[in-house]
Image (cartoon, rainbow, N blue to C red; front, top):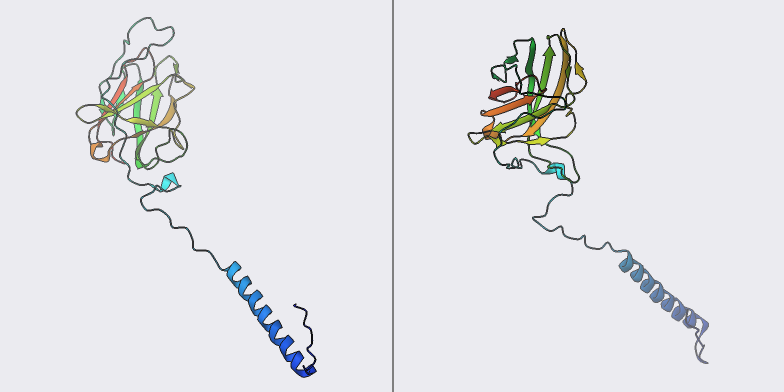
Length: 220
């Protein structure tokens, strides 16, 4: 507060009024300063047309385009000759059956969108999942640790990109003779307008020709 010197002719009453007036002015100034400092700043504007920080919020992205492919048998350790047991192709609703008692079927087909984040993730793309089951009624065990599943679509047999998100698991272990059953779940990104023309090839060992399913792969 400024120091006031009393002039010789100033009365105490008048002096007190002057002091109170100066105090009110100082307080008002301080109050105004506090109000200005605490006023909320204008929020920053979010640029339009930018991608969301949440990659899973981007829907309906197209399936990745890959070149056509022709599946070939995998060469496995100890395999000395070409497969000697073959079976006719089947629709996705049917069963591929070999004469020695081995058979495969697609137990379930489902559609959705890809999920996940990080390097290599493609969230929001179309996703088709296949539950594949092998039953071994032959007399020999089948090693299921090197199964290769390939999916193509369309008249050009374009390769569908494998998807490795939640729930996907390869065949593994051994399909025991006499009725042992093993199951794998595989997912691929297939354009929805191509789901009526899909081919799946399951190469599970060196003795059997690959099992082939073709036709419509819509949810069932």
